[in-house]
Length: 282
Image 1 (cartoon, rainbow, N blue to C red):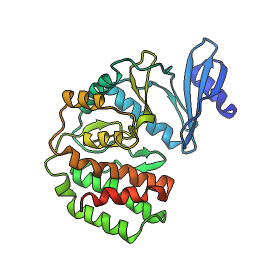
Image 2: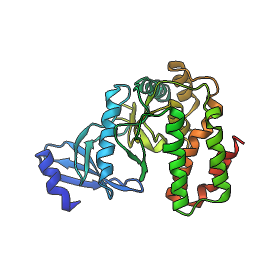
Image 3: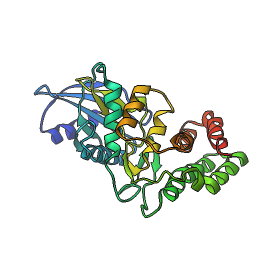
Image 4: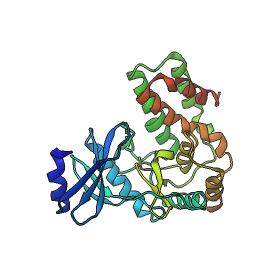
Protein backbone atom coordinates (compact mmCIF):
# COMPACT_ATOMS: atom_id res chain seq x y z
CA UNK A 1 0.00 0.00 0.00
CA UNK A 2 2.89 2.39 0.73
CA UNK A 3 3.76 2.39 -2.96
CA UNK A 4 0.44 3.99 -3.86
CA UNK A 5 -0.13 6.07 -0.71
CA UNK A 6 1.04 9.23 -2.47
CA UNK A 7 -1.33 8.54 -5.36
CA UNK A 8 -4.26 8.12 -2.96
CA UNK A 9 -3.36 11.33 -1.16
CA UNK A 10 -3.09 13.12 -4.50
CA UNK A 11 -6.50 11.81 -5.60
CA UNK A 12 -8.11 12.95 -2.36
CA UNK A 13 -5.99 16.09 -1.87
CA UNK A 14 -5.82 14.98 1.77
CA UNK A 15 -3.13 13.48 4.00
CA UNK A 16 -3.61 9.88 5.10
CA UNK A 17 -3.35 9.51 8.88
CA UNK A 18 -4.53 5.92 9.30
CA UNK A 19 -4.31 2.75 7.25
CA UNK A 20 -5.80 -0.56 8.38
CA UNK A 21 -6.17 -3.82 6.52
CA UNK A 22 -9.72 -5.16 6.61
CA UNK A 23 -9.12 -8.28 4.58
CA UNK A 24 -10.61 -8.95 1.20
CA UNK A 25 -11.68 -11.71 -1.12
CA UNK A 26 -9.57 -14.25 -2.94
CA UNK A 27 -8.63 -11.83 -5.72
CA UNK A 28 -7.82 -8.55 -4.00
CA UNK A 29 -6.88 -6.63 -0.86
CA UNK A 30 -8.98 -4.08 0.99
CA UNK A 31 -8.01 -1.37 3.45
CA UNK A 32 -9.66 1.33 5.49
CA UNK A 33 -8.10 4.78 5.07
CA UNK A 34 -8.49 7.65 7.50
CA UNK A 35 -7.49 11.15 6.42
CA UNK A 36 -6.50 14.25 8.38
CA UNK A 37 -10.08 15.56 8.44
CA UNK A 38 -11.31 12.33 10.05
CA UNK A 39 -13.10 11.03 6.97
CA UNK A 40 -12.78 7.36 6.13
CA UNK A 41 -12.50 5.69 2.73
CA UNK A 42 -12.39 2.13 1.44
CA UNK A 43 -9.56 1.25 -0.94
CA UNK A 44 -9.31 -1.94 -2.99
CA UNK A 45 -6.32 -3.29 -4.87
CA UNK A 46 -6.64 -6.07 -7.44
CA UNK A 47 -3.76 -7.81 -9.19
CA UNK A 48 -5.78 -7.44 -12.40
CA UNK A 49 -6.10 -3.67 -12.75
CA UNK A 50 -9.04 -3.99 -15.16
CA UNK A 51 -11.23 -5.09 -12.24
CA UNK A 52 -10.85 -1.64 -10.67
CA UNK A 53 -12.58 -0.02 -13.64
CA UNK A 54 -15.28 -2.62 -14.26
CA UNK A 55 -16.25 -2.75 -10.58
CA UNK A 56 -16.48 1.04 -10.53
CA UNK A 57 -18.66 1.03 -13.64
CA UNK A 58 -20.87 -1.67 -12.18
CA UNK A 59 -21.41 0.29 -8.97
CA UNK A 60 -22.26 3.40 -10.95
CA UNK A 61 -24.77 1.45 -13.05
CA UNK A 62 -26.48 0.04 -9.96
CA UNK A 63 -26.61 3.53 -8.47
CA UNK A 64 -28.50 4.82 -11.53
CA UNK A 65 -31.50 2.66 -10.61
CA UNK A 66 -31.91 4.52 -7.28
CA UNK A 67 -33.34 1.30 -5.85
CA UNK A 68 -30.79 0.13 -3.31
CA UNK A 69 -27.69 1.65 -1.78
CA UNK A 70 -24.21 1.00 -3.18
CA UNK A 71 -20.90 2.60 -2.16
CA UNK A 72 -20.11 5.78 -4.07
CA UNK A 73 -17.09 5.63 -6.36
CA UNK A 74 -14.59 8.31 -5.28
CA UNK A 75 -11.68 7.57 -7.61
CA UNK A 76 -10.51 4.77 -9.86
CA UNK A 77 -7.21 4.05 -11.56
CA UNK A 78 -5.14 1.08 -12.60
CA UNK A 79 -3.55 1.12 -9.15
CA UNK A 80 -6.61 1.14 -6.90
CA UNK A 81 -10.34 1.67 -6.51
CA UNK A 82 -11.36 4.22 -3.88
CA UNK A 83 -14.88 3.97 -2.50
CA UNK A 84 -17.12 5.56 0.09
CA UNK A 85 -16.59 3.78 3.40
CA UNK A 86 -19.81 2.38 4.81
CA UNK A 87 -19.69 1.39 8.46
CA UNK A 88 -21.74 -1.77 8.82
CA UNK A 89 -24.28 -2.04 11.63
CA UNK A 90 -26.84 -4.58 12.84
CA UNK A 91 -29.71 -5.34 10.47
CA UNK A 92 -33.03 -3.64 11.06
CA UNK A 93 -35.95 -5.86 12.07
CA UNK A 94 -37.44 -5.60 8.58
CA UNK A 95 -34.10 -5.95 6.76
CA UNK A 96 -35.11 -8.99 4.68
CA UNK A 97 -38.43 -7.53 3.57
CA UNK A 98 -36.83 -4.19 2.67
CA UNK A 99 -34.00 -5.94 0.83
CA UNK A 100 -36.43 -8.08 -1.16
CA UNK A 101 -38.47 -5.07 -2.23
CA UNK A 102 -35.45 -2.97 -3.10
CA UNK A 103 -33.90 -5.81 -5.08
CA UNK A 104 -37.14 -6.18 -7.04
CA UNK A 105 -37.09 -2.44 -7.78
CA UNK A 106 -33.52 -2.77 -9.03
CA UNK A 107 -34.78 -5.40 -11.48
CA UNK A 108 -37.44 -2.97 -12.72
CA UNK A 109 -34.59 -0.89 -14.15
CA UNK A 110 -34.56 -2.13 -17.73
CA UNK A 111 -32.54 -1.96 -20.92
CA UNK A 112 -33.46 -2.72 -24.51
CA UNK A 113 -30.58 -5.21 -24.87
CA UNK A 114 -29.02 -8.07 -22.96
CA UNK A 115 -25.46 -7.67 -21.75
CA UNK A 116 -23.57 -4.50 -20.94
CA UNK A 117 -21.45 -1.90 -22.71
CA UNK A 118 -18.30 -3.69 -21.57
CA UNK A 119 -17.13 -7.10 -20.46
CA UNK A 120 -16.36 -7.44 -16.78
CA UNK A 121 -15.56 -10.15 -14.22
CA UNK A 122 -17.31 -12.81 -12.18
CA UNK A 123 -14.75 -13.27 -9.43
CA UNK A 124 -11.50 -13.23 -11.38
CA UNK A 125 -13.08 -14.89 -14.45
CA UNK A 126 -13.86 -12.82 -17.52
CA UNK A 127 -17.61 -12.28 -17.88
CA UNK A 128 -18.57 -11.77 -21.50
CA UNK A 129 -21.28 -9.17 -22.02
CA UNK A 130 -20.67 -8.37 -25.70
CA UNK A 131 -22.11 -8.65 -28.29
CA UNK A 132 -25.58 -7.73 -27.08
CA UNK A 133 -27.66 -8.23 -30.26
CA UNK A 134 -28.92 -11.66 -29.24
CA UNK A 135 -31.98 -13.24 -27.71
CA UNK A 136 -31.74 -14.06 -24.02
CA UNK A 137 -31.46 -17.78 -24.79
CA UNK A 138 -28.56 -17.18 -27.19
CA UNK A 139 -26.88 -14.68 -24.89
CA UNK A 140 -27.13 -16.88 -21.83
CA UNK A 141 -26.02 -20.11 -23.43
CA UNK A 142 -23.13 -18.65 -25.46
CA UNK A 143 -21.80 -16.04 -23.04
CA UNK A 144 -22.45 -17.87 -19.78
CA UNK A 145 -22.77 -21.67 -20.04
CA UNK A 146 -20.70 -22.36 -23.17
CA UNK A 147 -18.00 -19.87 -22.21
CA UNK A 148 -17.57 -21.51 -18.79
CA UNK A 149 -17.55 -24.98 -20.34
CA UNK A 150 -14.77 -23.99 -22.74
CA UNK A 151 -12.80 -22.68 -19.76
CA UNK A 152 -13.36 -25.98 -17.99
CA UNK A 153 -11.92 -27.80 -21.00
CA UNK A 154 -8.93 -25.46 -21.03
CA UNK A 155 -8.42 -25.90 -17.27
CA UNK A 156 -8.60 -29.69 -17.42
CA UNK A 157 -11.93 -30.02 -15.60
CA UNK A 158 -13.96 -31.33 -18.54
CA UNK A 159 -14.95 -34.96 -19.07
CA UNK A 160 -17.05 -36.80 -21.62
CA UNK A 161 -19.86 -36.72 -19.07
CA UNK A 162 -19.68 -32.94 -18.77
CA UNK A 163 -19.29 -32.49 -22.53
CA UNK A 164 -22.35 -34.62 -23.27
CA UNK A 165 -24.33 -32.79 -20.59
CA UNK A 166 -23.56 -29.38 -22.06
CA UNK A 167 -24.53 -30.64 -25.52
CA UNK A 168 -27.89 -31.77 -24.15
CA UNK A 169 -28.40 -28.41 -22.46
CA UNK A 170 -27.69 -26.69 -25.79
CA UNK A 171 -30.36 -28.80 -27.52
CA UNK A 172 -32.96 -28.25 -24.80
CA UNK A 173 -32.31 -24.71 -23.54
CA UNK A 174 -35.05 -23.18 -25.70
CA UNK A 175 -37.54 -25.51 -24.04
CA UNK A 176 -36.06 -24.97 -20.57
CA UNK A 177 -36.45 -21.18 -20.83
CA UNK A 178 -39.69 -21.18 -22.85
CA UNK A 179 -42.32 -18.74 -21.62
CA UNK A 180 -40.00 -16.71 -19.42
CA UNK A 181 -39.37 -13.82 -21.83
CA UNK A 182 -39.05 -10.41 -20.16
CA UNK A 183 -37.31 -7.09 -20.69
CA UNK A 184 -33.63 -7.19 -19.71
CA UNK A 185 -33.28 -6.23 -16.05
CA UNK A 186 -30.32 -4.62 -14.34
CA UNK A 187 -28.60 -7.43 -12.42
CA UNK A 188 -26.10 -7.35 -9.61
CA UNK A 189 -24.70 -10.48 -11.23
CA UNK A 190 -22.99 -12.08 -8.21
CA UNK A 191 -25.34 -11.74 -5.27
CA UNK A 192 -24.56 -14.09 -2.39
CA UNK A 193 -24.34 -13.48 1.34
CA UNK A 194 -20.83 -12.02 1.07
CA UNK A 195 -21.84 -9.36 -1.45
CA UNK A 196 -24.32 -7.38 0.58
CA UNK A 197 -24.13 -5.70 3.97
CA UNK A 198 -26.28 -3.66 6.35
CA UNK A 199 -25.20 -0.02 6.29
CA UNK A 200 -24.75 2.24 9.30
CA UNK A 201 -28.55 2.43 9.67
CA UNK A 202 -29.01 -1.30 9.28
CA UNK A 203 -30.42 -1.05 5.75
CA UNK A 204 -29.32 -3.08 2.70
CA UNK A 205 -26.26 -2.14 0.68
CA UNK A 206 -24.90 -4.03 -2.35
CA UNK A 207 -21.17 -4.49 -2.93
CA UNK A 208 -18.84 -6.32 -5.37
CA UNK A 209 -21.13 -6.51 -8.43
CA UNK A 210 -20.73 -8.30 -11.75
CA UNK A 211 -23.27 -6.11 -13.51
CA UNK A 212 -25.11 -6.77 -16.75
CA UNK A 213 -28.66 -6.64 -18.10
CA UNK A 214 -30.28 -10.05 -18.20
CA UNK A 215 -33.12 -12.17 -16.87
CA UNK A 216 -33.83 -11.39 -13.23
CA UNK A 217 -34.30 -15.08 -12.45
CA UNK A 218 -30.53 -15.45 -12.98
CA UNK A 219 -29.85 -13.00 -10.14
CA UNK A 220 -32.29 -14.73 -7.82
CA UNK A 221 -30.90 -18.18 -8.57
CA UNK A 222 -27.46 -17.09 -7.38
CA UNK A 223 -28.98 -16.14 -4.00
CA UNK A 224 -29.99 -19.79 -3.52
CA UNK A 225 -26.48 -21.23 -3.83
CA UNK A 226 -24.64 -20.17 -0.69
CA UNK A 227 -27.30 -19.08 1.81
CA UNK A 228 -27.88 -15.69 3.40
CA UNK A 229 -31.44 -15.03 2.24
CA UNK A 230 -34.60 -16.03 4.07
CA UNK A 231 -38.22 -16.59 3.07
CA UNK A 232 -39.15 -12.99 3.94
CA UNK A 233 -36.71 -11.73 1.28
CA UNK A 234 -38.29 -13.84 -1.45
CA UNK A 235 -41.87 -13.15 -0.35
CA UNK A 236 -41.27 -9.39 -0.40
CA UNK A 237 -39.54 -9.62 -3.79
CA UNK A 238 -42.41 -11.58 -5.34
CA UNK A 239 -44.98 -9.21 -3.91
CA UNK A 240 -43.14 -6.23 -5.43
CA UNK A 241 -42.34 -7.88 -8.78
CA UNK A 242 -44.06 -11.27 -9.22
CA UNK A 243 -42.07 -13.99 -10.96
CA UNK A 244 -43.42 -15.80 -13.98
CA UNK A 245 -44.80 -19.30 -13.65
CA UNK A 246 -42.14 -21.98 -13.95
CA UNK A 247 -39.32 -20.04 -12.32
CA UNK A 248 -38.56 -22.97 -10.00
CA UNK A 249 -37.92 -25.22 -13.01
CA UNK A 250 -35.58 -22.67 -14.59
CA UNK A 251 -33.62 -21.99 -11.41
CA UNK A 252 -31.04 -24.75 -11.87
CA UNK A 253 -30.02 -23.60 -15.35
CA UNK A 254 -29.07 -20.26 -13.83
CA UNK A 255 -27.26 -21.85 -10.89
CA UNK A 256 -25.20 -23.82 -13.40
CA UNK A 257 -23.31 -20.74 -14.59
CA UNK A 258 -21.99 -19.96 -11.13
CA UNK A 259 -21.20 -23.57 -10.28
CA UNK A 260 -19.21 -23.93 -13.51
CA UNK A 261 -17.39 -20.72 -12.63
CA UNK A 262 -16.55 -22.14 -9.20
CA UNK A 263 -15.33 -25.30 -10.90
CA UNK A 264 -12.98 -23.16 -12.97
CA UNK A 265 -11.86 -21.00 -10.05
CA UNK A 266 -11.59 -23.54 -7.25
CA UNK A 267 -11.37 -26.95 -8.86
CA UNK A 268 -13.02 -30.34 -8.99
CA UNK A 269 -14.94 -30.01 -5.73
CA UNK A 270 -17.70 -28.36 -7.77
CA UNK A 271 -17.77 -30.97 -10.56
CA UNK A 272 -20.48 -33.22 -9.09
CA UNK A 273 -22.71 -30.23 -8.36
CA UNK A 274 -22.42 -29.10 -11.98
CA UNK A 275 -23.34 -32.58 -13.21
CA UNK A 276 -26.29 -32.68 -10.81
CA UNK A 277 -27.66 -29.38 -12.12
CA UNK A 278 -27.29 -30.56 -15.71
CA UNK A 279 -28.93 -33.91 -14.93
CA UNK A 280 -31.99 -32.12 -13.57
CA UNK A 281 -32.95 -31.37 -17.18
CA UNK A 282 -32.41 -34.86 -18.64
